[in-house]
Length: 106
Ligand SMILES: [Zn+2]
Image 1 (tube, rainbow, N blue to C red):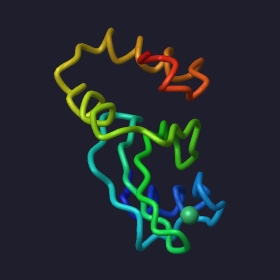
Image 2 (image 1 turned 90 degrees about the vertical axis):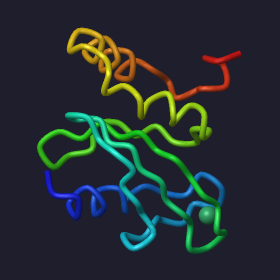
Image 3 (image 1 turned 120 degrees about the vertical axis):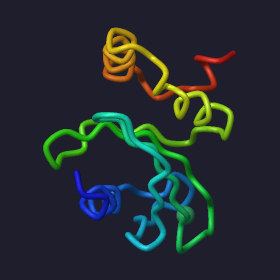
Image 4 (image 1 turned 90 degrees about the horizontal axis):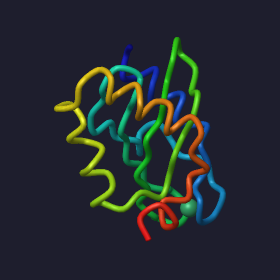
């Protein structure tokens, strides 16, 4: 999928701090693995840096998880070593996951 398309899709996501929508120019794609995309975005209004994991299928954002810490993102970014089965598990996990990473890792 085109990175420009991904950025456009992610521009509909709002800043978790102030509610401002992210702008395409302020979104960076860090890496991706099949339908999973890892992005960072900085808010034009409050300058907050946000890390996101998005599941994107056929030009459509299925799920966006935000507010990841660097360590959490790093963990995701190394998933390319996983097997297809493990990826599927992760897909299922993210599908049902409520986004509360602090609870998950506590
Ligand atoms: Zn903001």
